Structure formats: C-alpha cells, structure tokens
Amino acid sequence: MEENDYSIVRAVLAGDKEAYGALVARHSQSVFRVAFRITGDEADAEEVVQEAFLRGYQRLQSFESRSQFGTWIYRITVNCALNMMTKRKVEATHQIAEEADPSQHQVQVADSAADPERLLMSREIESMQKAAMHNLTATEQTAFVLRHMEDRSTEEIAAALHIAPNAAKQAVFRAVQKLRRSLAPLRTNA
Amino acid sequence: MNHLTEDELVEHYYGEAPADVEHHLHECDTCAEAYTVLRQDLASIKPSVVPMRDASYGDQVWQSLRSSLPAYEQQKKQKRHWLHFNLLQGLSYAAACIVLIAAAFLAGRQWEHRQHPNLQSAANNPSAQQPIILVVLGDHLDRSERLLVELNHANDTGAIMPVKAEAQDLLSANRLYRASATRAGDPQLTAALDRLERVLVEIVNEPEGSSPSQLARLQKEMNTDGLLFEVRVLRSRIPDQQKSSAVRTKGVSI
Image 1 (cartoon, chains in turn yellow, cyan):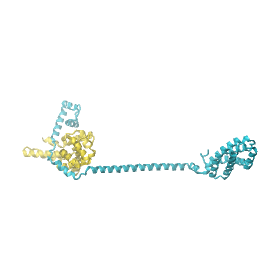
Image 2 (cartoon, rainbow over the protein chains, first blue to last red):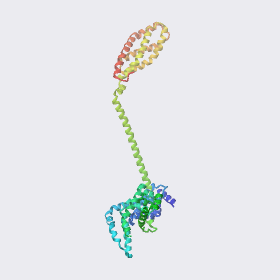
Image 3 (cartoon, rainbow over the protein chains, first blue to last red):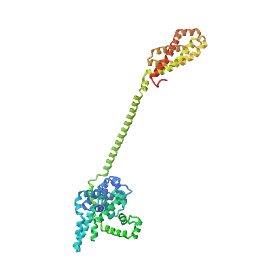
C-alpha cells in the first residue's frame, strides 16, 4: 500500500494536515516496536514514537518518492531512539555500573534447582542481559538491536545510523564481543 | 591453517560472510567448536518482548501530535520567505562585489595618474598643446611663405591662377590655426595669421585675369612684403619653441 503513502504525503504537502494522521496510524506499531527494542523502556519508546513522527512531518519535503515512507520513518525512529539512548546513558551511568557487576550475578544464579529458583534465575538472566546491553555504547547497542533483533543488513544499519557500512559492521562486532564477555558467567553456570 | 576470527564467525552467523567461511567450518574442528559456542551465546540473547499496543494507538499518537503541527501551507510560505531573504542576501553580495570592483578600478586609475602625472598635465596644459600647433603650423607657414613669394613675383595675368587655388586651400586651414592660436593665448601669432587670412581672402576674391597693375595694388595694399617677413620670423621661431616644449612634455610632441 506504499502507493497510498505517496498520495498521502502529497496531500499533506499540499496543505492537508489531517492526512498525516493516516500515516501515523499505519506505521505507529512498527515504529513503537523498534523504538522499544532500542530503548528497552516503554515510556521512552512512546516518547521516541512522538518525536519520530514530529520530525517526519517537519522533514516531509525532503522525503523522496523513490524510497518507501515506512523505511524513511524507520530510519528517523532509529535516530531518535539513538539520541534518547545517549541521553539516558549519560543520566544513569553510575546506576548501571552498579547493577552490571557480573560477579554478583554469578553468585546469585549458582546452585539453583527448584522451580521458584529457576524463575529467579530466568529473571537474573534477563537482568544480566539488560545490564550487558547497557554496557554497550548507544551506537553499538542500536547497531546490535537492528542486526540481531530486527534482522537488518549492514547496509540498512549504516543508512539508519548515518555511518559507513564498515563502521556499522565494526559496531556490531564490538557489541557481540562485549555481550559475550558480560554473559560469560551464564555460560559457565549453565 | 589460519583459523577464523570472531568477527568472521559473527559475520557468518548473520549470513554476511563469504562462502569460503562455511567451507572452512566443515574442515576445521577448532573453528567449528568456536562457532558453536558463539551461536549458543547469540541465541541466548532473545529479543525483548515488545508490549502490545492496541489498534487505537496510532490515533492516540496522532491526537497528541496534531495540535503542535502547523499546516504545510504556512511552512511553504515560510520557506518562500526564507528563499526571498536568501535572494536579497545574494543580491546584496553581488552589489558589494560590484562596488569593490569599481573601487579597485578607480584606485587603479588614481595610482596610474600618480605614477605618470606628466601624461595628465600634458593633456590639460595649453602650453603642451602649443608644440603640436606649431609643428603643424610650420608646414602651413612654409606654404604661405611660398605663396607670398609667388605673389610678389607674379607679373603677368597667368601667374595668378595657381596662387588663387593655393590661397583657397590655405584659407580654411589658416582660420583653424588662427582660432587655435587665439585659444593658446599667442597674440603675435594670432595677429600674423589674421593678416595672412585677409591677404588670402583678397587673393581668393581677386577676379580672374587680373592685370599686373591690379596685382601690384594688392601687394602694396596688403603689404605682402611685410607679411612675408613676419611669416619668416614666425617660421624661425617655431623650431626653438618646439625643442623646448618637447623637453617639458615628454612623449606628447609630434
């Protein structure tokens, strides 16, 4: 239905502001999904969604008809989410550092067999993964989410982050290295 | 055998490695084992569960945005205004460039005049124009002198004809030289050319077939002998003036 997207964009540019509502309704779910995966927080994701559609409206004249609106707004969302991540990481550096202590988690997940304990272990694993993700830089985390969870190619990641393909590839490599190092205690206790 | 790096294994996991990586993994147990561990590690990182959003979520987002979005027509006008501002800015830059070029041209001219002040003064100085007049006048006086000599020795009717033709030719030139001499402020030359002009007019107006007695009367009335002497004095004056003026007005004298 991308043809409809084009006609809506033309209508908006011709002065029909309300037509943009149809584009928001059509793409808000996918935009929220990628925003949440990158930020990992529901409230932040909602903020990113609003910011992305606002920027999309303001830059609609630069939208080229040869690309799809969905792809275009996706890239804007990734950028907004990346900005949000950078801001949040600056705000919460110390808190994350304390939670990301792998030795603590290694002790907590050891020697567990009963179901309540398995449930606890599952939560601990999730917590460790979150902490490991927070140890990444904003670019590494976004590149890894796009590669690992959104199945985006290196070229797509590079385009979304406005970096060279090789830089995008290196960001994914560094993210994988750091994550494996952070999650190594899970492997030894599995 | 070179083993695969972690980066190559990661590339292979995400399906972006070259084909020979797959081939290597079949042959190398070490790399195959490393790849198995990597695959387990990455597989353990599950995508986080995205909270569901109901069907009205898009409308909610739109309602929260729509009040803060200006209609696009206004934005177009703003852009036009911005373009207009840029056009004005461009024009002002162009005007500034023109003023700069004009200033540079005028400064160049001033500099040139200061470097060669003689050229300008020579063009405006009447005394500098005098050598030009005198040099050209020298030729005129030569011809006038010859004419007066011929007139003084014209004793028969047939001799007056070529003198009349020459006088006619000299008359118009003489008027111009007289006017120039007046403007140049040379009363002696002006007076001599004035008398010469009157003689030339008389010669031109002399009827054809004038008798020798009529010619003698003209020579006497007009004192052509005195005029001839005066012309010779003027002729002798010219080379000295020309020489001294040529020194003063370098490059202008002919």
